[in-house]
Length: 208
Image (cartoon, rainbow, N blue to C red; front, top):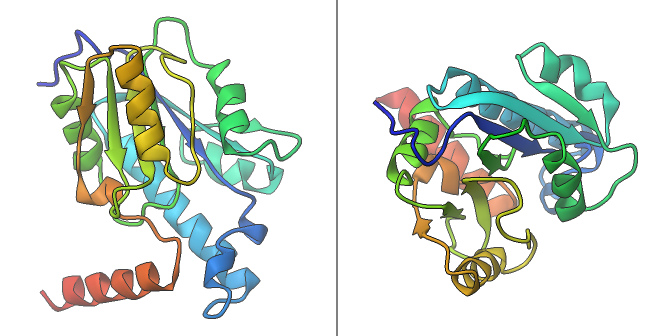
């Protein structure tokens, strides 16, 4: 049983770049349509994991592309249209205004192909005594998920070196901070090396 004393009615926010312009660092390997398809596939996996989780009450996807709205709503999540491309931190701030009153917040990236519902529940369980929990990217520099007891408990600082920025912001406010490392949350696909690793993992999984 997950202790809900700290994190109650968790609302997940999933920011998504416009699929047709996403994953440009993979352009040597994948054309624009393939990159868009990869982005959508990973988003579907994240939404499925959140929906199956025992910890998440509701989900919002924030994106400047209305074409993905039917896909998002068809998987039980709300769609929030940015209308203009605000940048990640501004888009998340925009979405934070829609968080139900009294809810905790999970911000989680959309490009997590290995994420499972068990990963989501494990994050909540391992952070139960924290006001804020960070899940670093696999290289330790980025932030792939933030679990906050309440919205806007710290200023969001996604971008280069975001993990250390978020860590410093939490320490400055003297929050009860947890750093949780979970492979399915930490593994994202941003460059060709990530793509190669994903292909190997999927091949090994098929062979087992």
